[in-house]
View 1: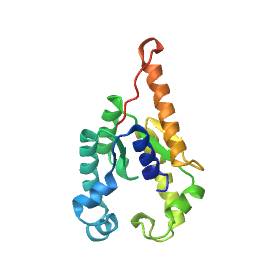
View 2: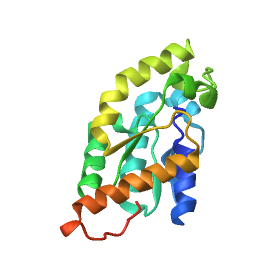
View 3: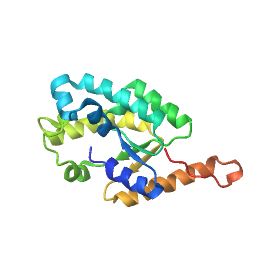
Length: 179
């Protein structure tokens, strides 16, 4: 939460002239209600089940920039989909952020279901619980503290180019694919 996934995703989408798809938006459209309402009325497990279905479909169908909700990689079957995607040449980016930069972006109030109670402490607990999973599921980590969306997008693109160049035979040119 507050890492800049939507803003950086939008910047990359414009930069590469490809569509941006946000699985949180897909979930709300599919359910016909907000994520907060799904948590409240159906519970977190129902939300995570729907999230897994939406993410799996998006990884298979979408050709562009894909923004996943922060809890998506928590399920082992979703991590397996991400690993398959990465094995096929896809890039999975962990947008890391400190609480100092996340707080103003998120607001750290209790309007987010997972931040109920003490929002600041809950955010710290959540990132502490998830960090290892994020690092395992990603192929690249970008720190977004003090970074504009355009700067974050340029850094992701730069690292993707370097990674592809190092994998290309004889260090030759290799096109930057988007997914």
